[in-house]
Length: 190
Image (tube, rainbow, N blue to C red; front, side, top):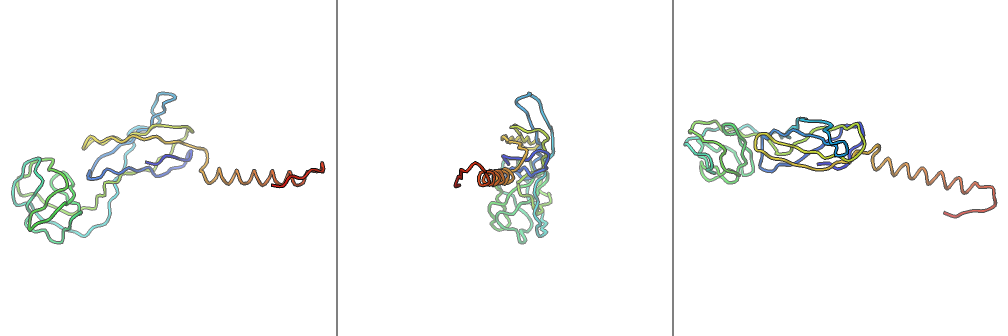
């Protein structure tokens, strides 16, 4: 996730949940100083890339926990593609003939007639977060599908680092001018 946000400016906060496609993350922002939530249950959206359509069907039943499914055709599926089978999205680890080895075990039983489609789920979840209060806060993303949690800290500043450096540069220039134009006879070389 991102560590520095600018007050009242919506900025992208993201997390990666490798091999957990189709999760349902909600983000909470917690203020430790006041022991309260500033925001709760903000929905994070999974990044989805465009993919070429593929559709096949499982030809054999499988039980939860197995890692290989058999389909009627693999078409142009490739290793590292993501496929939707019944209610979940899986990564493709290997393809051998019409057998597809999944990147993680099946999360449910298959009866052998489920449709298999290629999807663009990336396992990267994000949202635009704006916080109206300066300070340091805890943020926690909780997923209701797989039970995943990710926590981090963010600092909310009134200005960006670039703006703070620009302001510092302006202050230095103003002080140099003030010193150079001093009328007391002293000159300071900077």
